[in-house]
Image (tube, rainbow, N blue to C red; front, side, top):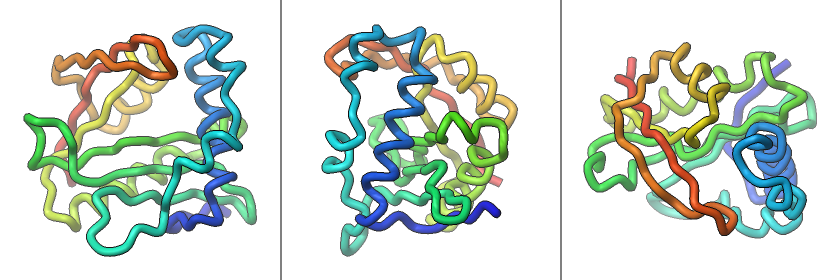
Length: 169
């Protein structure tokens, strides 16, 4: 049975494993293979801090089936200059073995509900250009591209992201 809860620092290694696996599978044709081959959960895990005190700008929740973390979502107030009144989904990653099992939608419902509780009426997220699977997933959930493009550097390479937006229920 799938459950969603706030992430803790003891989840860092499992979240990193999901993060790396989903990058390696989901971005396989979008990012060079040598970049994928260098990704290691143990390197990624130290970057997370899920137990921030006070008014943390971002929150992370994990989805688990039994004792196994199968996905996570990170959300909060947007950092975009023109979207400072909107909530943002920063990350939604699901273990590829759990794709198509309802984990992603469950995480989105949870995050959007929390953003709404924080009084946001709209939300944004970014999709790596060419990631058709992710774009379709978000479009099915009611998101649409607003035409905004962002150039960024990820893993030492230049990438392009497309912004998606939606109203909160």
